[in-house]
Length: 166
Image (cartoon, rainbow, N blue to C red; front, side):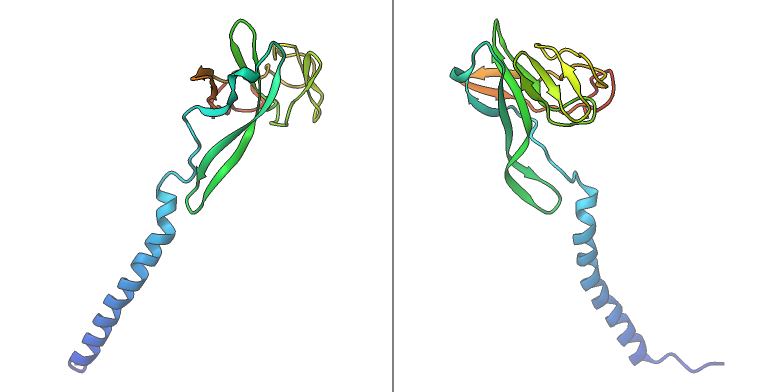
């Protein structure tokens, strides 16, 4: 038969294993915890994009800035999410300045919109025109609250005919 178990070896290995778990457990938890939760938060509440008095009947481009974005490790302040075109006719309207084809920035040219990346053109109300874009510019929810413009930033799936929120 073999040698009898050595108590000292047993205690040393047992104590070493417990101490190892005490150190490794929290370290593994720290690394794995962000993957278990929601890793990126984007604002879902309406964002202030300016004074309602700045609006007129022609489209105006405004940057859409989130006051705070968090990911699993970092919090960033004043992050530009994109841009929107807004105007006030019969009602206040907003269109995303993101091309629905591949997400390029759209510019305003007199009474129409142009995506310079693949030459998609959109009509004066953002409707689909020439080029590879399969739908018009995406409308964004906007409201006037206490004289301020409150826009909800929404992202849609690119290169589809249907507006599917991401």
